[in-house]
Length: 338
Image 1 (cartoon, rainbow, N blue to C red):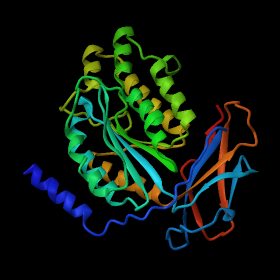
Image 2 (image 1 turned 45 degrees about the vertical axis):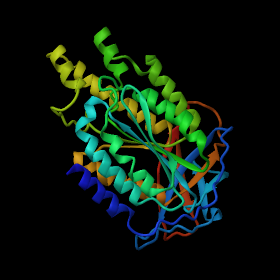
Image 3 (image 1 turned 180 degrees about the vertical axis):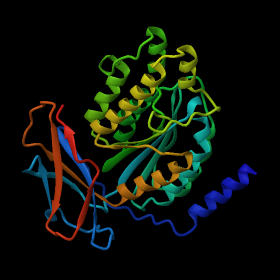
Image 4 (image 1 turned 90 degrees about the vertical axis):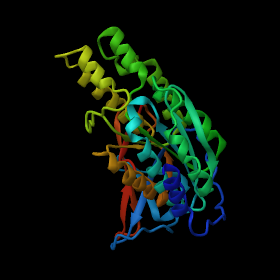
């Protein structure tokens, strides 16, 4: 029965003509500290405006106009890598992962490319970069076949994907991760020391964070089972429930959830990405559709700040257009100069 349903799913999403025409790639060198921001534009009626030239925009940082050094039009190919947490604590999400990816693939533009990997104790590539929808859909069954239940190398998986997978392609890039963020190293340290390891002392986390800063690839995180949207499950492994048993009448389990969530938020912030919190399991599918629409209809801007000092201050980013009736939605409103 499951096989029949999956075949129907493929048939539904690959119906119609798949265009093979490719837009030219835009090669971007990031040897200087670029600040990137994606922007979607709508007219007064709420329709997407996708054909504006670079000179229609201005970028400001803390009110000072900046020189636009990189411009990616809406038509530019977007390379989106989907990374899925397939550890034991996410077991009840695996079939939703399939539905989310199927919907995401259906909304790809002809010029866009997608790659897919999963992680538990190890990282496993399920799909190399492709713009072939049918090939991408055929990778979906692997999302529900765990390799090593018993560990979660979240930090290592993100680090490897950012450093290795995106070296294979050029153009605009984004990483989308579905996870609860519970890297096994945090849990082990807590059990060993009876306290949560501070972020600045977390070697594995800091290595991943450094990679995210250096690679300048936006990381979108769909985060579930955090302290903001806790959904305790009886399936798979649940570190939070174990901590409640080991440390009764203690705040450590709640500190653990909060620490995991703050780490994910920092990853999204330093990479110029975003973190989204589905309230229920069913919210995951529309969130993937939302991200797909955002990246598929956005312009990308890159500039080098006229204030290069790394003083830790928050720098406000503002995009303006010469057309006052147009509305702009930015992927980020600022960044911390670190």
